[in-house]
Every structure is written in structure tokens, then in C-alpha cells.
Length: 182
Image: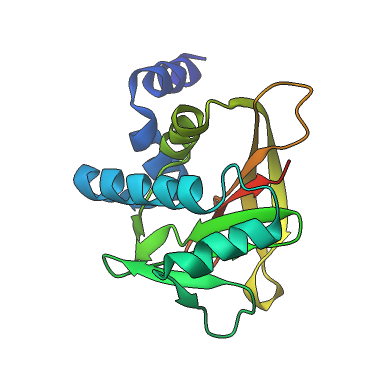
């Protein structure tokens, strides 16, 4: 009883980023790097996906922007490099997605779940409506644990923003942020 109370009090007192390090077994990137990459990730999402009405509109925005090149081995995916990391935009038939690998170096975590969720709320004015723990199929058919966070403008809204955050295999399974067209 005493031990579980200490753990609970520690979880309440310790900042979420530090808890994320312990939970995922990775060390968080330096704060200046995290801020820079989170800003870049959210700017890409806002500029390329958020508010687009269709796959055609999102694709035109990516192609006309001329900052992306088609990704090797992935049809319909466009890629750019920012400070040595690959960011991709994928305008699909029902969603537009931005993604990045979370483990940017062995044992180093680029972004915490809490920081990304907070940035989504700030940048979209959508609110978190539910979170699901899921198991997805990763590369080589390996299981990847993810947390899927759903954001909506309001309950009646048909479009949504969905964050898929891997909590395992972060070196091979991408964190994705998807905008479901209206």
C-alpha cells in the first residue's frame, strides 16, 4: 500500500515528459530540439492537410509547394528533410497524413505523446474526444502498440484529426497525424 502510494504521488509530481521517458524506455530529445520539431510537424500538418477538402486539393497543395519530393518506394507519399529527419505527407482518398519517426537516434525520443496532443489542441482548436490503446501491424508483421487520439471540433462534426502514437517499435513505426476531410 505504502509503495503504490509513493508511485502515485511520484506520477502526480513528475512532469509528463519525464514520465514518458520512463514509460517508453527512451530519453527525450533536448527541449530546444523537441520544440523545433514539434513546431515543424504541426506547421506541415496545418499547411498541407488541415482544412483541405479532398485528396486532389491536398495533393495540389503539396505538389505546388515544391518543397517535397516523391518518396522512394511509396506511391502518393511526398517527403522532405528537416534537420536530418524525414517528414512525409500522404494525401489519400479520405485522409491527409503527416508522419515522422519518433526514435531519431538509438534510445532518443523526438516527441512525447503529451506534447503532441497539447499542440494539436492549440493548433486546430479541436478537442480530444477519445483515446484508444491499439495493437497495429508494423514492418515485418511485428506487433506495435499504439495510442490513437481522436480530436473533433464538436460532437456532431464529421471530420476529425487522429493522432497515432506508437509506444513500441518507435524506430520503425511512424507517428502519424491525419486529417479526415470534411
